[in-house]
Length: 75
Image (cartoon, rainbow, N blue to C red; front, side):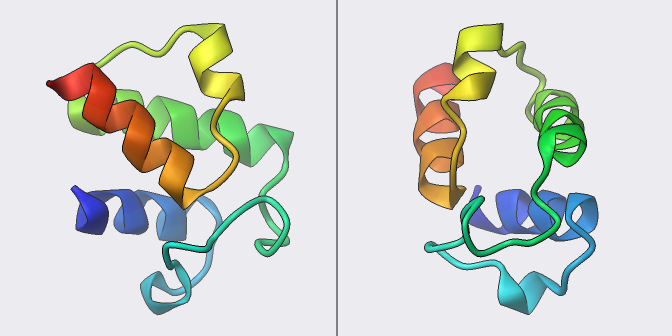
């Protein structure tokens, strides 16, 4: 799952996949803005075949929150 999340984040935020880490967040990814946030949410929904509620989408603030949210949704 980590590799898929990193791939999505690197594509959405237009950064190398190597620059995405467990510590990646809104604070350290310059291209993480509201539009790219929505694009990431849509990409996650598409990749993992899930639907995120607006409140779930707003809880995504970093790599770890994405991972935690997906772990709860998928299992």
